[in-house]
Image (cartoon, rainbow over all chains, first blue to last red):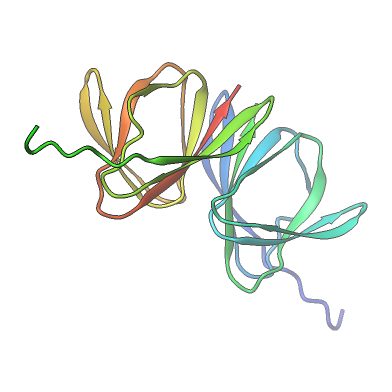
Length: 98
Length: 98
């Protein structure tokens, strides 16, 4: 497919998986993505860098910018793909609570 | 009291307080501390910098080093003081779960 360029994958590093939480650090080179996934648990995201995200969902795509030093929480159930739309590496830590 | 030098305080910034979590970013100049406190909730700590901590507890003091990009979880109930024993600013995000 001319013009098609697969995205590099984001790298998940499992930091902790116990009875209460699963903590994963996600590292994205520029243009990398997680692949489409569904969140089975509620989760908190803590950016380790400024994050220039592209969120791809059934309802469409949206750009989300989250600054290092911020944090947010989301309920379980979302299905999306997360892309590093920036030109610098991006990283965040995801804390899923059981 | 000659020779006594009060520590500068660490600065807490409340990022989110909802039905599920309370998220606070703690920023410590060198030598700063939180003051003695008891954790009423279980919590996860995500360092935003490398952290050179001094933990002061009834049982004594201990030095704890946590790297940026790591994370850890602790149960509720601990009573301690957290000091930035390093010579660089230290920061972490604390996610308390309700």
